[in-house]
Amino acid sequence: MKENNTVLIIEKDKSLQKILKKSLKNSLCEIVIIDNIEQKLFADRRISPGVIVISASSYPALLEKIKDDNKFTYTKLIIIANKDEIPDYPPGFDVRVYDFLVIPFTPEEVRVRVRAALSFSKLQAELVEQGKRLERMNRLNEWDLHIASQVQHSILHLDYPANRGLKFAARYLACSQLKGDLIDTFISPDGKIGVMVADVSGHGASASLITILFRTLFRTLALEESSPAKALKTVNRALLEPLADIYSFVTAAYAVFDPKTKKLTYSTAAHPALLLSGKRGKIDSLEAPGMMLGMFSDYWCNEGEIQLQSGDRILLYTDGLVDQKNKNRREFGLGRVKKIIRENRAESLDETLDRIIISLQRFAGGIPLEDDFSIFMIEVE
Image (cartoon, rainbow, N blue to C red; front, side):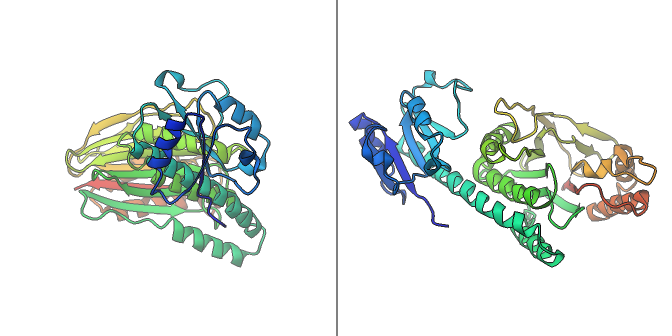
């Protein structure tokens, strides 16, 4: 698919036009400048911008102009505004509004925000194309689904950060070949380690595609956020438009570990709480609840922080683990998970997770998995 690197600047102030053009001079994007949306150049079908930069006063008229025009389907808007013009959720807020440039702004701000908006515009267009392909694959035979699974696995391959003060172990069981759970780790620019488990609603091709989208968005938009709550809020905003018409959502548990201080900051989005297992065998739930991702623009979530010690273990998991039922329709439950963790405190992380899986399989007694489930354990060195 041809990349769209066109940035359309709609601004009548000539001095502001020059500032924006100069800021984007070496940004490898094509810049088109017009004074207003009534100019013929705006209607030129050969110009399909990835990003439009426009003043807050002109935004309502632009939105009315483009709302039913498929030329602007993937266009992201960056609004130039004074600080007092940007309430949290302005009247008529549209999910195409990707970001704001608050006056006064620097050239670096312009470049960073435009690059990010262009990347997201491209990602959304690619998502639609990949979605069409994956849905077709979901109707093919088992071999084709196996290939799709291998492709997804290659994209979502998990690599553990080395020599960062943590040990890692993870296990994943899927109820179908295309998975809807995600385990991931990140290293932020300041050396902190992010760990995440996420669960996409539904199964099959659409859920597997959203896992790829979610991971890409997280790594693109939220990696530099040291606050898990702010990171989740940023990703929620980016998910609103792609998930708007498919009635899907994502739950997640996300934590950031500082190797220097051994502090863990964490937040959850409609997801099971993290479990802390101390060296003395006590197991605590780390609660920091929040809303599911990709459903609501007025998003909120809490954030917690805890001082960890060497030997402390943290478990992140998806609800498919505790919700799995046996032939009597009884759930495996969180109590069993805690008991296994407590009884295997002296074992390695891998052995502990294997014991959880073996216990669940014995409990289920041959009953097929009703949902994917992921378990991810870390230990402070």
